[in-house]
Each structure stands twice: as C-alpha cells, then as structure tokens.
Amino acid sequence: MTESHHILRARHRTLDCRPLIEGGAHVMGVLNVTPDSFSDGGLYLDADRAVERARQMVAEGARLIDIGGASSRPRGQAYGAGAPLVPADEELRRVLPVVAAVAQALPDVWISVDTFRSDVAEAALAAGAHMINDITALRFDPRLGRVCAEADAPLVLMHSVGLPGDMPHEQPVTDVLSWVNRELRKAVDLAGQSGCRQLVLDPGFGFGKTPEDNLRLMAGVPTLLAQGFPVLVGVSRKSSIAWAARTRLEEPLLPPEERMPGSLAAAGVAVQRGAAIVRTHDVAETVQYLRVLDRTLRSGADIPRESGQK
Image 1 (spheres, one colour):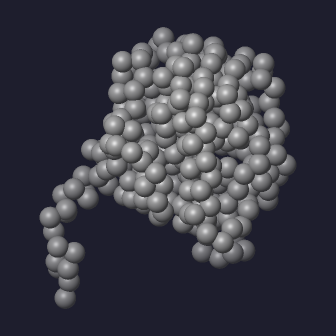
Image 2: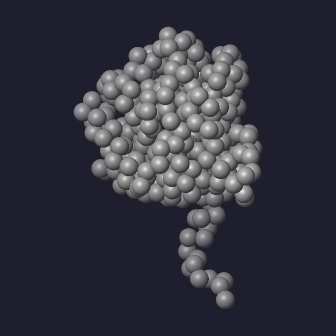
Image 3: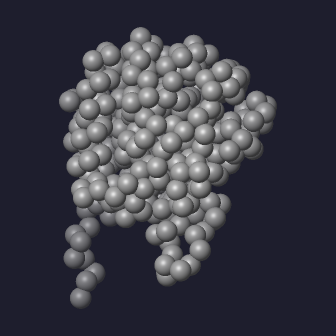
C-alpha cells in the first residue's frame, strides 16, 4: 500500500489521514439521531436540533460529523439486552433529513453516516454524505462496498462480533490483535473485490472484546496501520473506560457522562501510535487534548529521553 491510501477524497475535498498529522488527529463528532443510543439517545431526533448540534461540534473543531440512525449498543452486563435491529425504512426516516440539512448548513464539513445497510448508504450519499461507517465491516450487507465504490466514497470497516440486533459485548480471545487484524484483512479483501479502495480501519473498541483487550487494541494501532490504511478509534464514554478507571473491582462503573477523562487517555495512546481519526461525543475537550498532546510531543522531539534524569 502507498501513502496515497491515507489521503481520503470525496467531492473535491481531501482529508489527510497520515499517521501523526499536525494536530494529532482529526476529530469526528458523534451525532446520534436515535432514541436509544447508550450516551445521547433521544437528544437529537429533531432535525433542527441535530443541525444545531452539528454546528456546535464544527465550531469546537470537528472535521467530520458521524450521523447514525440505528443504535449499535451491544448486549451484556453493561447495557442489558442491547439494541434491537431497526427497520431500514425507520433508519432512512431518521437519517436522511439530517444528512441533507447538515450538508446544506455546513458545506465544508465531512459527513459520515453510520450504517450497515447498502440502501441506506446509497440514499445518504445521494443526500450529501461523503463517507460510510460500517460497524459490521461488510458482514451484514456486502453490497455496501459496491455502493461506496460507485460513489468513490471512503468506507470505514469496523471489527465487531455478531450482527446488529444481536451483538455480544465480550468475547474473550487468546490474541486480540491477531484476531482483529485477520478479520479486518478479510473485510479489506471483500471491499477490494467490490472496487472500493478508499478504506479506514476501526478496531471496534467495545464490540465483542473484554475491557483488557479493548485497551490492548489502542496500544496495538501500529499492527492495524501495517495493512496500509488510516485507523479510526471510537472509545468515547464506553464501559471499558469506566472499567479501567476503577481503583477496586467492587466499585460501580462511572456513568457515561463522567467517562470523558478516561476516554481522552485511551484515545491519546491510540493517536500517539498512529490513529488519524478519533470519534467522540466530547468534541471541544478532545480537540484541545489532542492539540496540546501533539504540540507537547513535537516540542520535545529533539530532547534525549535520559535528559534530566539523575
């Protein structure tokens, strides 16, 4: 793979996703137009409110807005039964007006649509979206690769277990890095067979992994980069962050709205290892964190590690 795979293009715009870009990484703001997402479900069902939230995130520094109309909440101890499978017509009803409105109101922002359905993706791209974020990495609907290829739109391939409507929260494995890399390589091959060449890889933090394995994936970003494509991470407010933040196992998990500092810590590790896009609910805080992290690392790049040690 060449460096060109890290430059995403859509509708005469480009997004530089080479590792360790200036600023640390691009920030993708989460905009869920769902009643049941684990963190912000029900807040932005109205299109006007959704557009206002998108405006706010862009003002805070988001380069991309990820619009989703179907919750992907997995089943398990943290989230109970998980999110049911949303009918395609309902997903379209939720997503399309918001995509069209955001595209009109914010013509310079990259719009991503979080969907695993080819018909929803096709309609969203026609309405003004620029890229598709598939949490099943083409396992639910392989035709989605062809839709993105025909539109010359980037496609995010995220590793997960199970299918929407029945996605387990944890599945212990012996070697999570090898497992995720192997499965994403299959998805890359499938996308390539569809003619889709603009790809982004997401290790799927929180989807079918133990908390320990989720954290290991953030440290293991270089193994994903070895496949030759940009890496996106989405750790924002997830239960593994609350698990890692506990000092004692018997402590209750922090609620989602109190997990932002831990989310920044995990995202920061991934960005230092080469992740180029960070998907988050907390845009302003993430932008500030990544900017300061990047400038601090660059300012000390020429200082020997042993300097100052006694």
